[in-house]
Image (cartoon, rainbow, N blue to C red; front, side):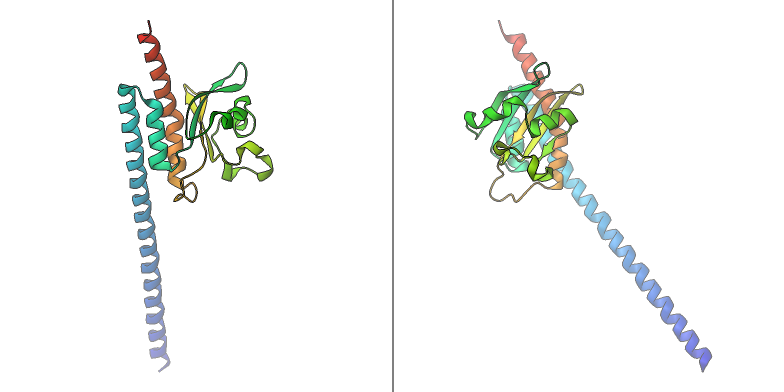
Length: 200
């Protein structure tokens, strides 16, 4: 009788272990599938951004391309591109969309997130800043994306308010910002060099 109970208990334990292992494998499988889908989504976004930048080099509308990428893939129509001047440690406005020029003047001195971006060599995001570190004119600044060419910071992209349907930045947005850090900078520099070549 006791022997039969032991066998039954062993079979129950074995069955429970098999069920637990099957559940663990299933969870792992779902996690990997989600990761694959996320990576596929990211690659689609990066391919779209890359194709638009390449097209812009031929068309000579790099700033418009950057605006389209940010509008369609990030979700903002308030954008400005600034040039950085290392000798003076300040900025000048190169191009903007959806923002009044007067609202951009306080950023030219390189204070706040702009200054930290240059000093740290890293893009800055409002949601990752201590509230006390934000300057009054930065309240609508969502992101300050550095532009690097040959490892040198040549400017920044400032992204202000997000579209109403966008609640905040997502993981894929940060990956796209990394793409823009280098490739948008190269496209801008290329367009400027091309402009100098055709100038009389």
